Every structure is written in structure tokens, then in C-alpha cells.
Image (cartoon, rainbow, N blue to C red; front, top):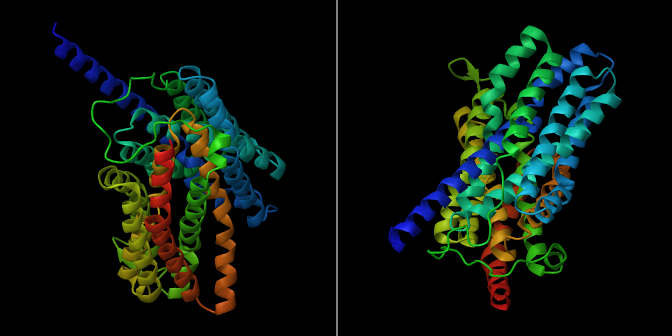
Length: 425
């Protein structure tokens, strides 16, 4: 066999391996998507079964999950990196699968809020371990298509719950929410646990090096403490908080906004109300945005893609606030908001790894991901702004302004700052 033939066989083998790795983590992300996006299906059944549990008390479990799933991901990311390419991903995803299952099993047996909160805590730890490791896995295996790979991985989390809405609702309706928690705990946790043993990070020289990536990438791998000392990281963090926060100001309030706009219960399509149709379209847009803008960023660069996405986001908020009182306009512009918001979970991880390298990518990405947790303060802030202003218009204007500011930061601050960082490395 000639040298050229040998190289071609190796390239084909590597491509098969890395796509297998990517598909595995995408499935893992789909399996944990219900922890966040399927929670709403259980709230009313739990409240009906436990009349003494206030709605706010039940929702505290969700808040605990989000806090643990977000803020402790750097710990999981650190273990995934330092345990090595073969042990790290396997260990963290396997442990995550076990914790995810335990969390929902506890929910199925919870007769007190304390047990429900414990289930949320354990589920948050497991979900964060799987999420952090999966995203880190994608950016390591695909330096040449990093935006697309992490976008597909994040789409698994953003849209995965759509696949199980009908089965979960069926089990809840026929056997009770406890049975749904229990059986989906075993299915979701079991699939994650099994797939964990297929995972490994790439060895040096195993990822593509024959074609230069279309975005600038560092040749140095920064340690976590080094990353925290760079202004580039903190600029990315502030930008992440602003875009995530502006999105949460609107996306978390779509129900109240639709009600105040007078379109909530308007029948729109096949008997579905505006809010129902919007929820389906928003889920599709949210999932599709991640690989779409990730792929675009692989071809034209991260900052330019940020400028396009967040400029469209600013327009989307302005249009929804000004024209959303018409039923179809509400659906279309709300979907555009999700389309230009969901991509933060592909653009920022890609930019982070381009800038700080792959060796400690999982923990570095996890540190940046905590910006999602920091941005949750914008959700109650939106209600306060609406109450003070007497309408949602000020909320939409603030969200629009925040996106415009991030566009300016991406083009005129982040891009030259990253260029200088690359020169030093």
C-alpha cells in the first residue's frame, strides 16, 4: 500500500471515530434535555397530587437544578480534563448518567419538598457533568468544524425534549407523574451510562491538521487560572451574560407577554392557540440556531457571525415589542428571537476554545458557561421593569439595546483583543 493510500485510510478512520464520538455526546445531550425543558410537564400534576405544595415552592426545585447544573460545571470539566483523554470523558459522563437517574427516581418517590429539592440537587450535578463533558468533547474532536460540532451538540440539549413530550405526557396521563419520573429516569440515565463507555478524547495528532481552519486558533493551551487572568475571557463572559440575559427577559416571559398582548388563546392553526404554535416554532428555532450559526462562524469567523446574529436579535426584539399584538406576528417574531438567541451556546464555546486551546477546553468552557447562571437575574428584573413602566415596551427596548452593545463589543473590542492574544501565543 502506498504512503498516500495509508494516509487516506487513516483520515477515513479518524473521521469515522470523531463522528461516532460526536453522535454519542449528542444522544447524551438529548437524554438530559428533559431535566430542564421537560420539567414544566410535571409541575401541575405534582401540584394537584400535593395540594399543600405551593407553586413557588415546587419551582424552587427547578431553580436548584439550574443553579447546580450551571455553577458546578467547572468542577466536572476539570475532572474530565485532568483524568486524561481516555478516563476523563468516560468517568464524568458515566457518573452523570447515574446521578441523572437518581435525581428523577427521588422525584418519583418525593412526598416532601425536601426530597424533591434533593432530587433537583443530584440531577443538577449529573446534568452539569454530562453537559460540560459533551460540549468539551465536541470542540476537541472538531478543530476544523468547531462551530458546527458544538452547535449540533448544543442542539441536542436545546431541542431534545421535543422528542419525548408526547411519551411523557402519555405516561403522566395513564400512570401518573411518579411513573413518568421513574421510568424516564431509568431510560435517560441508562442510555447516558452506556454511551459513556464509548467516549474518549482525541490523542495528539489525531484530529485534522492537513487543512487550516477558517478561523484563527491559538497554538497554546491555557490553564484555567491563566484563562481567568485574561481580559478576553471576562469580555466574553460579559457579552455572554448580556445576550443570555436579554433573551431570558423575553423568552421566560412569553406566556405573560402573550396574555398582555391579547393573543394567548387565539386559535391559530389546527386548533392550536398562538402560545401553543409559538412554543413549537420556538423550540425548533432554538435548536436549529445552534448548528446553523456555528456552521456560519466556521466559514466567516466568530465575531462576524456574532455581529450578524445579535443584530438580527436586536431587530427581533424590536419587532416583537412593536408588532407582536397580531397573532401570526407574535409567532414569527418570537421564533426569530429564539433563532438569534439559541446560538450563544455554539458561538461562545467555539470562540473560547479557539482562543484558549483544547487541552483544558472542558473546564475553560464550563467557567464561561456559568454566565448562563449569572444571567438568570434578568428574568425577575424584566417583571420589575414591566411593573414600573406599565407595559412590556421598556423590556423590549432594553433587550434590543443590549444586543446592539454586544455587536459593537464583538467587532470593535473582542476581535482586536483576540488578535493580540493570538499574536502573544
